[in-house]
Amino acid sequence: MKTDLESLSNDMKLDLDSREFALAMDKQDPHHELRQMFFYPKMKDLPLVDLDVVDPEEDSIYFCGNSLGLCAKESRELVSKTMDDWAKFGVYGHTIGEVPWEAADFCVDEQVATIVGAKREEVAIMNGLTVNLHILMLSFYQPTNTRHKILLESKAFPSDHYAVESQIKLKGFEPQTSMLCVTPREGKETLEMGDILSCIEDQGDSIALIMLSGVQYYTGQRFDMQAITEAAHKKGIMVGFDLAHAVGNVPLKLHDWGVDFACWCSYKYLCGGAGCIAGAFIHEKHMHTIKPKLHGWWGHNRDTRFQMDNNMDLIPGVRGYRLSNPAGLDCASLKGALNVYSKTSIEKLNVKSRLLTGYLEYLIRSHFSKESGNDPYIDIFTPTDPNQRGCQLSLCFSIDVSTIFSYIAKHGIVCDERMPRVIRIAPKHIYNSYEDVYRFIQTLQKIMTKLAPQSPQPNSG
Image (cartoon, rainbow, N blue to C red; front, side):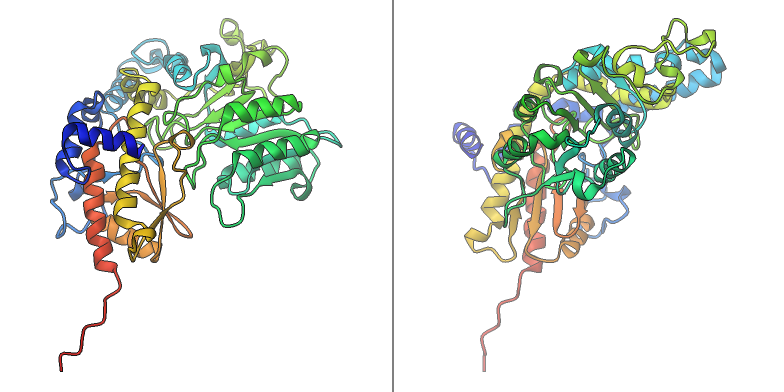
């Protein structure tokens, strides 16, 4: 990626470190206008900002889309319209309006299916991420006395870890013997793909299910989902993925890769809004063979659902896993964001993402690397290979992470701190700019200089 950036810099006859380069990259970015379709927090509105060191009217530097995506302007409009429909129509809003509540999930599932690389009937919009994870594992985790292990990463997101533990206990086994955690090599933060594949090969006969993330939340490492799925299927293992940090971030081809199931939230890269309705995928090959263990009335055939005869007419596939009617306001908010995504494609956004994140990486290594003698310095946990990451870089500072985070927040940089020693920075392709990256680096230079150890002064006497 450095070579690509240097080639662009040479073609433009501009220094990579210059503001002019960042502005020139924004000018030629075909997605730059999408930024105007989101509300961007101002410095003056953020709670931790020191207004004495920033311009209160300036846009903040928002690099936290891996935690909560910004609000799309169309989302606010659609939510407002949905509220108006409720006010005007009452119960009739279930069947009329731009996002009729009874079919609210059908207003967004096709757009989401495109983003995850699935057929529409393989996707359902429902519940929350961990709820979906549980109800899918109830069906896909079928342990036996000889094949009962679940493979996951050792530093899985806590909710995934808890869900796997509880599913193992629910099926009568113990996490100590049935939870198989892949661990980074000594001195490393990220996992080696070869180690994952070796584990599958060596212990595959005892593994019932693989439950990994698509993009690891802490390190930002992107896993080769296709290779993992192929290796697992050769050993007769079911494969599921938590795509919380992958959906809307990197290209996905769940159907073509043959993934058995997956689930995701919609409030990070998809910008659906805090706690917004989640999604799930089940491959069509399982449509008539694997069924939900828990039933709810929204899994009943739509044509006969309201006959209310208490005889389940189960919809085949993932739509049969829906338990309750979808949240209309959630779907309206999500649709507003998806309408922005529909103006381009994840594949095209990924082209920008590789450059934008590569630009951030290049500037960090240029100005803050230990190898260049910097003190304090920054290490990057996230893989350098663009094929092994998405928008996020996980930065490890040589000084107390809470101290640096406090200074960053005072300067209007929105990111997040992950103890014990990481700050995650996510330049998001759909609304972040190269100028955002430039401003971040300039601000970080000021902060790091302020926090640098003071050299002893020569004795003037």
